[in-house]
Length: 501
Image: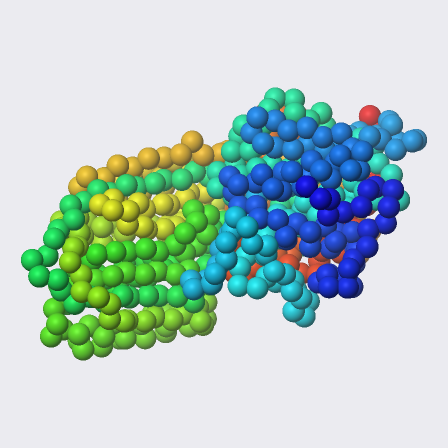
């Protein structure tokens, strides 16, 4: 592989066509732009892993991988700093790959195309991957900055955070040595995170008979698009519409009034994203077309009014397609529509210990037909383990019966806040001295890998912070430029204040 960067003793240089050449801190934006060129979806991190290993080799830094595919790069202590406690900085290699329907993007080969719009960095038609590419970029900048003196600095890059946290789950014992960990995967500048929710998935497989129609019936394709979507942890409380729920409501209406039959239903994509789009194909009686269109439009107007604030760009379309020759059998169709209608989605409970923190939630993430099988994916989060298991159990009950198999994932643990944390005190004081105001100290409803690290390293002292990222896990993802500079300044100041052993 041809290196995309200079060695540690050389100064990096932007080319004239690079997007971020005028942004500071220079090294952070340089590396972030290089990272944007590298496809790196979950479970397909080979290219970014090789990039990191080549980076370590070319900069004469020690590196290693474990069986899970995680990478650790270690910078030795600078002269005079050998007595400082070592620190491990942690980010994840993978990103969520989301795009709007109709956009052509090969996630295995095509780069993300970033651009600047006002105070923000965005990507053309896709997710940006600042979650967690900006964390990686900051680590690489620290590793190659000769002006920043540190004790031993370990940089951990995990795999598969977005689709199951298997990198953290399968992390080798004693893979790193530090007892202080700074997670670089938070998305709200000015907020220091000292706890997170645990999570799990509940997946429903519903088999059905494919009924052949004697004579093909006219078909319609229904679509709901333009929803905001968002991260199923950070944004589950914001009142955004769920495309699975909206489409299911429309199908219930049309089934009740016109006895339509369903031949396909696809909505949502990722387990950790609120679904933004939904599509269904139905068979109907020819003389019902005008009434179906009228009923669909009436439903859409009602939903537009209901979500007028949170979903200003919601769109719905009804179009004729080729005749439909097969549909799902009637009993299965009834069970599907009733179960999805009853399936909970959104905030289940708010924390009694921390103001404005969601305690428990569930995300109805996707529905997809696969031959004569319907797969429905949901994900649950909670800072209370029993509450997480309870809501997962409720979902199992909702879908039980009628050739349905429900499976729960092993999940991952939460991270209980420690208000006496040493690294919290250091980071808080650094933030006050740099920016002249108190940071917000809180837990996050999203899942972080910190809970899994704590399970393997019970004495680990941890904190998480980052720049401001909005719209994560959607094509509207954007990274705030000013907050990235503050993120860098804070991290450097914290590293400078790490105490001696």
